[in-house]
Structures are given as structure tokens and as C-alpha cells.
Image: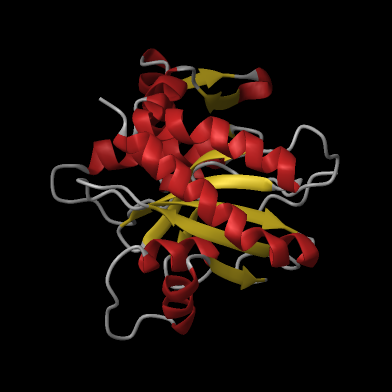
Length: 240
């Protein structure tokens, strides 16, 4: 059975810069549709943007024209195929190298493994591997954001850089032992263990993050997550 998917969504600005209102509205709709389980209707988009239904319809039609959104059944609009291409274009080398390592970890540890990167003040999930041999595991959404100031992924990403004044205490602990750990900071009952990936010559900060309901798995996972993150770092250094 899958765990409940947390209602953590990709953030969108509440105000647009002057001259960018139409673009901002379109992007806000795209992000909302990507984050919705069952798609969105014209009426829902109209309510989201607080605009007339005709404006909502025109925005949706433009997204459909670019294959970013597709029409579903019963008047709903769903994520379009073009989004998959855009996702694959984001940090392709990191995703390609990390994916097989994550799949192996997920099966070995019977847990969900996620790849997070730092963006501004958030940790953003960009890839996920679920165990193929376990029926009970946590499921999360790609694109979910959590604050760098809470949760194992955020702590690990902060630990990848030199210490800064006022950083959470778990960050210093993670930096000292090589991995971060948290319990119920993002989702009730959830344990998380994360280790930053050593990436040289780039500003990208990334980490592998294990999530599980089992405390015994979390207790034993730290060194293995650390080794896997180091393996990814070595593989990236060998990339042309």
C-alpha cells in the first residue's frame, strides 16, 4: 500500500512583475495542473486566477497548443506530453548517473529514494525510485518542495556547503557524520535519511534522500546512503 502523498506543491509567485501578468498566469496554471491529481477544469482555473472563464479557457488552449497541457475526460485538463521532455532536460547528467544507483538502493533498503536539488531556499525533488519488491512504501510527487530549514533533504543540502550563522543544529550534525536524519518533520510517521552528493565545479547542490516508516531501516541506512552519494559523485567526475 502506498503512503499518503503529501500536499506539497511547486510554489508559484502570487504577484507578477509589470508586463508579465499573462505569462505569470499561464505558468501558474501549468504548475497547478502538474500538481493536481485529477487535472483541473476551466471553472477551477478561473477560480484559481480570479478571472472570467473565457480568460481561463484561452490560457488553457494556449497551453494545449504547445502540448504542455492535454484535454482529458469530463472537461478536465491534464499535464501534457511536452512536460516529460522538459523534465528530462533538467540536469540530465545528474539524473542519468543517479537513477540506477537510486533503483538499487530502493530495492536493497525496501524504501523510496529521492533525488533533491537546492533551489533558492527550498529542496526540490527531481527524481524518484520506488522499490520493486515491496508492497508497502511511501510515495511522493516529483516537484515537491520542502524548506531547506527542515527535513533530512534540506539539512543534507545545507551541509554540502560551509557552515553559516544560524543554520539548524541538525545541519552541523549531518556535516560531522556525513548524512542527515529527520523524523516526522515533513510527513507524520516518516523517517528520512539523506546524504549530499559531492559535485565539483558547479553550483548545483544535490542529495539522495531515503524515506520510510520503519525506524530500523532509518537507523541502519546512514552509511549506505553516504556511500551511494559518494558513488554518484565519482561517476559524475568521470563524465566527459
